[in-house]
Length: 338
Ligand code: NDP
Ligand code: GDP
Picture 1: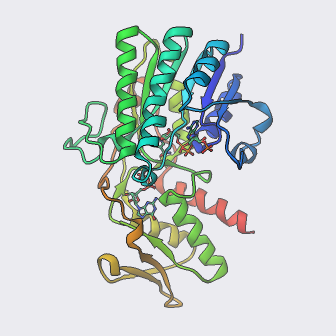
Picture 2 (picture 1 turned 90 degrees about the vertical axis):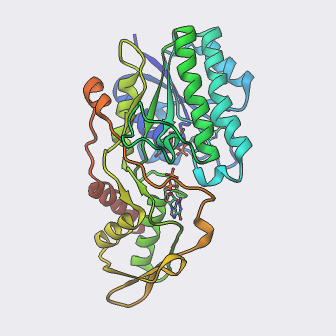
Picture 3 (picture 1 turned 120 degrees about the vertical axis):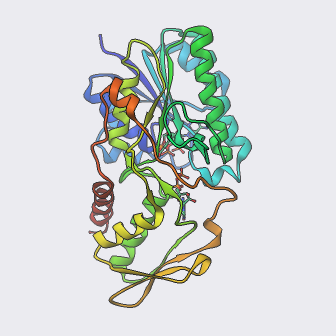
């Protein structure tokens, strides 16, 4: 019999890639979507899978909605990818972020416990939970030191997953995913912003990319590789949490430089701190500048994951390099311009 899976956050980056994967594995896929004025499912259209998904109303802040959906459909698997996912916004909306990302997961767990205890649950945990950790190795045993309302909301959810697994024997597990990007990444995230803006500058020959702290470092991978690990996690004998990462780290400035090079710019950096900027060598035009408004009240300085456990148990490894990821994102933006 075909398996039935619910993906919450179906309109997001990971929801779309995961839906594509599950369809290829012959699942009946339900996509949880909340009401928005735009109602846009453009990513599903971009991947040519819109018609293959059963869209259902799903709002993480609404108990009755979650309970009904889970009670009636009794899914084999639920992938909870829905969230207020942007760290930057979580400083402006700490309560909503906590409600959706934290309590939303408690609502799902309660509904599963009461009405569908055989449903397996995947929770989208995040490397942001490590924050500025004192641990030198960022693996499943590293200490958490969350440094944003977003990270704290996700850590609450993470512990609830662990608690319900232990207390009620549910098949619930969390993937601690490090940053993962793609052509379908949300526009507010720094990678997409850099690629989009620099591509615009290349074609329109005007404009300037404004960034915040370019010295933080992130461990970036390709979302298409990471959704495969999510699925693997629900196919094990027993539920476990796993770190999923590339194992490499790069600064935002390096991301800018590699993107610029691929797009045919040669950048020369000048100045320091808020006065730092980059000019294009040939034209001498300023193409990157620093703007205070993109700095966060607190930030995570360095993320670099250790995915040995996933490699050993899930036989998972990333297949897309930092450079190929950037090229893929640039090629997509270029194709939109053309
Ligand atoms: P996106 O921001 O692209 O997608 C988030 C999804 O959640 C969207 O479909 C959004 O719907 C939905 N959503 C937001 N609020 C609610 C709500 N109140 N009720 C129901 N749905 C809601 O995120 P990604 O796909 O990049 O990430 C997927 C998950 O993985 C998220 O939980 C994120 O926090 C987590 N994560 C992501 C990482 C990354 O690097 N991408 C790293 C680690 C964890 P709408 O379109 O209506 O806004
Ligand atoms: P995050 O790791 O989930 O917060 O992913 P982001 O892509 O939003 O941010 C990654 C890093 O880039 C953070 O340290 C940000 O402070 C830094 N950064 C610098 N400038 C910007 C910017 O203009 N936008 C965003 N989103 N991040 C920026």
